[in-house]
Image (cartoon, rainbow, N blue to C red; front, side, top):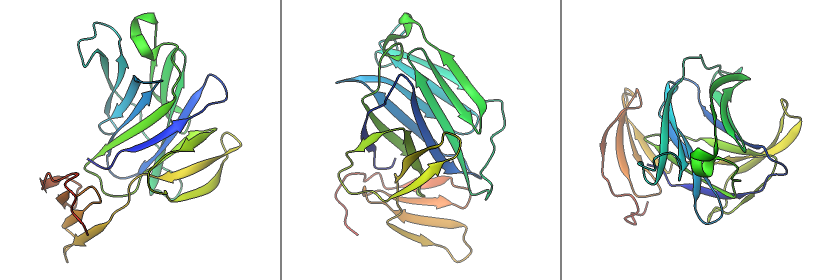
Length: 219
């Protein structure tokens, strides 16, 4: 798992929008925690381009870590950006629903009622992310305003969002620290900043990990 990213968020209105830039030609398992004041409201998790889940704290029977997890399957096709290196998904949350979309195509939508605990009528004040078994670079964009609180200064770039006509910050979440690629490019050995050493195949499958996350290894 990568180093988690955290940010305080402030939205001008009742709609929260998060955009996540992913590699076009491979699956990435990631999760975004939507936190309230002092506790978690919800999370949105995608295992790949086909499966995911939404968690509501204090929701339903509260039989999954104090809340309710709803698994879902995505049947619609994803569309990559014009250069075909990336694709962008948009997660939109209002007081009573979450919608996951890609280039205007709705991939999944879930409505909430009072029975869904903190997913219903609770604003997000901070986000955190988790990403598993991927050592490239992902980016998250929060529209229209955010305040970065990452301990180390992130790489940022300003750009225009043509679909919304507003500006946002593109914040680097993960950077590769040290990597060794075999001559035939079939295997990749990565030492990440969190201290984990991993051996991966060309197809992205991790075949071995040291399990030394947070153990203070230095490069």
